[in-house]
Length: 219
Image (cartoon, rainbow, N blue to C red; front, side, top):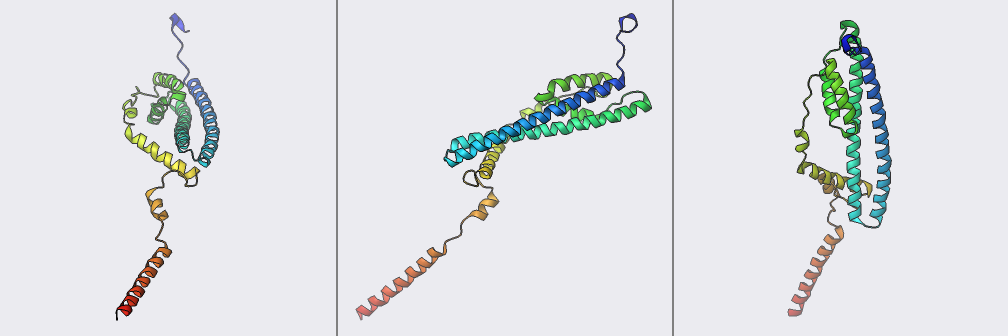
């Protein structure tokens, strides 16, 4: 506490160092989540292959959907890690600026990364607290969350999931289940068997022979 009960202003350098520690900690937590999801995916993949051998298509599709969602989650977590790394680099830049100007500067890059991270449930609470602190410190302007973005994910996302399920089934069951892409389907389309063509030509020859014998009998 300062004079007259006022709080002592936070030291900018200490704040940046504290944010950097929090960001690093959240990055390690995301790594653990990613590894856990990947381990679980291996188990689901084994179960899917076992179900495919038994010809249980319904179970295969359910398990394939789990794999699709787990891979999608991992992709989001990797994106979050990239945003955390971006903010960490920006914090180093803030320390350099602090030495020259004596104050922290507003950063559009930090704001962009923070807006993306706030929408991620896994680290949402920490990022919300940090964004409030950064707004007070002058690094961020007032943040506007894009609430409409989640509303636009409708039937298109579900169609995409179904396509991904088919690809997973095709990948993990060596083509026994799932739909091949159009281009692949065209290449896999069987050509007419030569035996059939030969049989048809032989049938035509036999017909001509019969006609000749009939003509001979009539004469």
